[in-house]
Amino acid sequence: MTPASARSGVRNQDVDEFGPLPTYLELAMATAAATAYDAATERENRSLLPSLSVVEKAIAVSIALLALYGTALVADGLYIKAKAELSQILLKRAFAAELRGEDARPWPWADFTTEAEVTAPRLGKHAIVLSGASGEALAFGPAWLTDTPQPGDEGTSVIAAHRDTHFRWLKDVKPGDEIEVTRRDGKVLTFKAGEGRIVPWDRSGIDPAAQGRHLVLATCWPFGATQRGPLRYIVEAELVDPQPTGAIPSTNTKPLSRAE
Image (cartoon, rainbow, N blue to C red; front, side):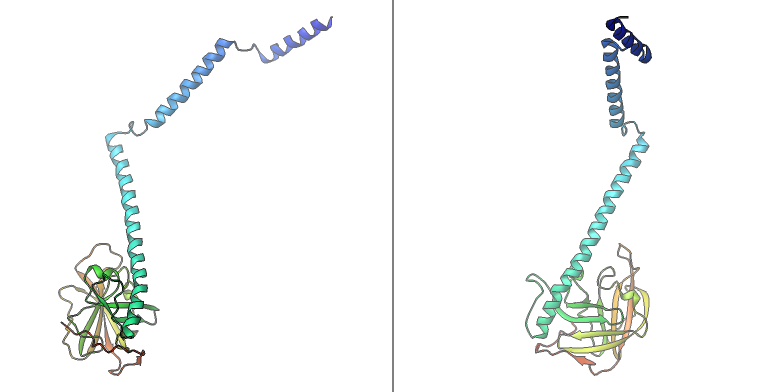
């Protein structure tokens, strides 16, 4: 056997082992078939939503809208809480200025001034209280209701705030807890909390002219709700001693705000 015939025999043996090689026509047909399959798969993926029934489409759209609404609610809640916390920093500075006798507003366009600071020592919570606050301004801090006496004066003083920001800790106040109020004249007054109770907004039983020296902290109820309802959660407290239990150095000579 010559070398050429030997090499030919080896090639024939390889061909027999792997079978006949595809022709150019067969390769072209296979390529076209694969391309057509890929295109069909892509069209099927793109037409997934149109292939749904009307009810299924409505459900899918509803789920998407609910997801967007939930995201918006979360973002809005975070914004409200951030605004409440950051505004208290500016209010604390303004209250310190009030103690120094300066006529200070927390920001130039504020329609209120700082009046006091309320503290729950056991809970480690505190907030600057506003005077003459509108409903919109309650987003920045608790408000002393100006148709009630000053904290520590004869009668019942009322301080109100939102349940999801500055008074969200009110539900954790227990009977016997101390509530401290620092007025802008520097006097620090200590009250002893009673039992919290739930009342209709128009039948709270609060009497600003009641005998004694009382403090009421009020907020909406139930806690955690997103819509305002007719019920309020209030904690009543009694002044421990008519004499201030402390004092902060103050050069504020302006008279305190009085009930309107």
